[in-house]
Length: 354
Image (cartoon, rainbow, N blue to C red; front, side, top):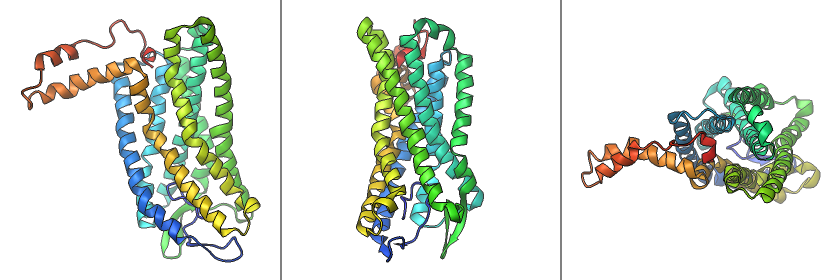
């Protein structure tokens, strides 16, 4: 079965012979090679700009005094780690030839999944952080420290590397007819088991467990908010709640399609048309899933009220003021007055902005 090419691929053959007779998939392959690289190039550019801006805001205003901000910082790093692998897969898709060598194949495949898993884990940590802050506010004052945030972040990156460890081990640059491919070389006698393990791992670590934790946490948060009706607490959890909902709306179709694809021999054995439909579904859901990298910064801008103030201050202070030297009709005095006012006045934590 031919996988979508933005995920590190398992094979690049035109025909799939698992169906008793050749199952020709050239049209699907050509469709993906034509439309997906431009889409993922757009995702890369928008996601890169958005997440770099989030990092600049966090670093510029030195607001690493809360556990929430540490997790938000690491979430953006996770997005960037994932995004920085995309240009290599785009080139691979266009050329249908892996030219970056054996070591880069292993590293990029591993970092690709490490970025994916770390993003999931940090969203879970942000959810737990908000749960403690709202439901167990007194306990949270002692538990939600910067030291604990750094410690849990290090542990999370270690768990993400462990989850992506099979990709670091099995992916290799291999010869396939006249071209080189970057694909996993599983043990021949257990190849199907490893493919199914990959799909189950994605669905368990990337969907089932995080979803269960988030349902438990937000059920407790909603109950607490309904009792105290505190608008400030509502605003404090709104951003993380939106991030969680958007993440699962984007990733659930892809995870379920991946699971169905791994077990398709049990459901659609010998059905070439169903296999083609599943390949198309993989490409469509993959496009939806990967756009999550450029969604989080947009959520920050529209949901985080104080983040918008930081962003406006940064924009006026470092961009608009300099444009006044070239555009004389801009209201220079007003802009200087706005940029001279610190958006952090009276603010103890950037987390309140989210």
